[in-house]
Length: 258
Length: 352
Image (cartoon, rainbow over all chains, first blue to last red; front, side, top):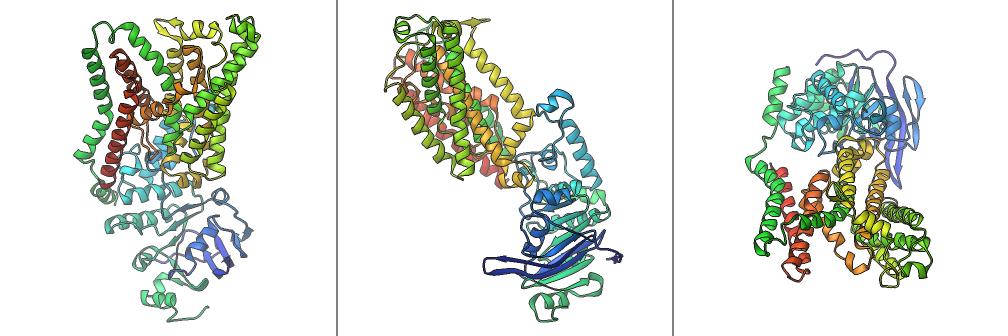
């Protein structure tokens, strides 16, 4: 894995993010910096606060403290729609695909193209254009599905994941967040999705990825941020650390907050 | 790399199994086979010149038109993975309200009881509007209760069924409207024909065509399927899911209101007992047409084909001089069989 240049201003920065659920402190002080064109993994044991952190970035939760900066400017994201307007797309662990719709319809779900003129204003869809653009997108990302007008329920787990990722990439202008992108997949399908993640970075997007699977993290991530008990322990360059060191930090056997 | 990914994808793609495809073909065609068998049975078992005649078939078409109108709205509802058990009641209440307005506006009570309707045109116009509005308002209520109060559709619409039947009976005193609706509606529209088909059949066909086009080609249909496939995912895609669900139930209510107009036009009067079977008829039409109770998939046109099962049964049994109550028994049994087929198909798809 080559190391990317991560100098210069971070694209997204989280500073001292806090989040409580009643008495439970999910995040005590989470910090991380996402560089442009970077795959950044967030790892940690169960309950470390990974999901909470990315849900704050994707607009599902509101932080109780700390700040988010995009391009160095403080931002607030109060719902997923606002996140999308800022160019941040999320691939949820459960994919959020409409199973009985085809891949093209899922790609354009909520952002449909309409026919020109009166018919379009009456809500008639331009299925041809959407289909063509979905095919282009699949080709660009090198996703091999036989046909974009097949209901996604008939696709394999990896292909479904690919459709969800393609949707995020197609609309994400800056950041794509992926929550456990390979959790439900077999070995071959996982490698297909990992290829896709590498492919995405080469299209000029940054990726925040949550994963339990450290070998996969080491295979695709440029940097790794380790969370433990709601705090950022350290951010490491993948090329300069080892799996054992990361596991040590996750479990608290090695290292204290930097 | 391209080839490699393609190969991975191809290897991972499930080939539609033969049993799965068989189940699909079966689920689409068994309805036609069943209908043909039904028609054949009645044709052979009734005296010739009674069942398979042009006038009897148009009669069947006439009663089917009402079921089709109900089934269109029910299809949209069921595709969202919901259910509307109230459309029979809404049809009845809308008919009572619209009918009362029609009579009150058309003339004084002595006049209408004597069969005179001096202001029939205005009465019919207002009555039709009241029918449709009553239906739409009831449907809107269903939609709001389901989305805003977060209640299961099955309970909300069952409650509405009770409310609408009860209110209708309260208004008409548990009996009929005081007089038949103006002849302009019953003779002119209900019994009137264009190109050999009764007007209500044309109305049902028009709604059917528009609903099919909207379901297949427009945003409304696509969102309906998306909501039924994955409501949470659709919400995360930025679609106003609650608002869409409210629209769908309102549509079902509105169409029940249109069916009420057709009902008044055909039968000239209305009473609760005659609408007892409407829900069963409409829901079985949808389910027999292959629309899945699990949501996400369905067909408006197939629901219209399914609508012939209850009406052909009703008609045939009457001609055979069998107690027509058997119709409910057969329709009830058929709907259970159809849902079983749906389950079977779903299990095959999931394990395939």
